[in-house]
Length: 227
Ligand SMILES: Nc1ncnc2c1ncn2[C@@H]1O[C@H](COP(=O)(O)OP(=O)(O)OP(=O)(O)O)[C@@H](O)[C@H]1O
Ligand SMILES: [Mg+2]
Image (tube, rainbow, N blue to C red):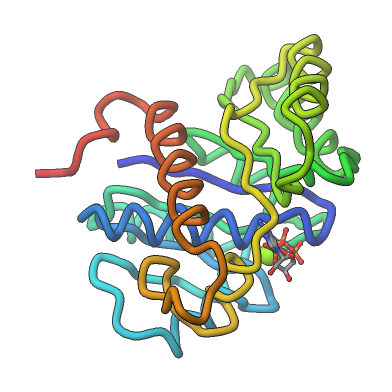
């Protein structure tokens, strides 16, 4: 079992999109996945209520600070992967969720490179390590990357973060309408209609590569499906 939290205190960084892509792709592969939707906007909960039944996927909604640990403990009895979506603002849930995680993913908009909200999460993780000795592995996910951005300039961003000893996933999430359509049509990416959604195969390939990379970061025991 693994607990992955997606955090960035800046709104619109691509957290919810990255959470839903990872969760639905893992569920498609037969893993049991529980999403914890802590965002008062309830994007994922609303998506889930209207989506066709998704085998292997559950969503816990409206989770308060007091209930977070209890909820995670509860769902983790059944789930191979627990994925926490945090709101896009400073939240009292942030430190608690980080402290419970096996890995923290920090989506940062690769196009805008507005890394301020991501830096706040990294500072909090470093603070937890320094003051409480809790060392939680984390990675930056470059999100909403323009497909025209050259490999060269993307590499420059990665190098900049690497200089600060921040791990950056090799696979960015590209800015694609297919990722918006997943919310629009209330369906997992792999259930979208390729006649209505442009570049769906590219979006699917992007999601597979991203999921593989996240899986490789998790503790070895949680990479394979629970018996
Ligand atoms: N890779 C992408 N391609 C196209 N659109 C995207 C992509 N990622 C996110 N978006 C769009 O950008 C907006 C913000 O994305 P999202 O809701 O995932 O961010 P968030 O970090 O969860 O935001 P919040 O902080 O408000 O919770 C949404 O309209 C979403 O559809
Ligand atoms: Mg969100």
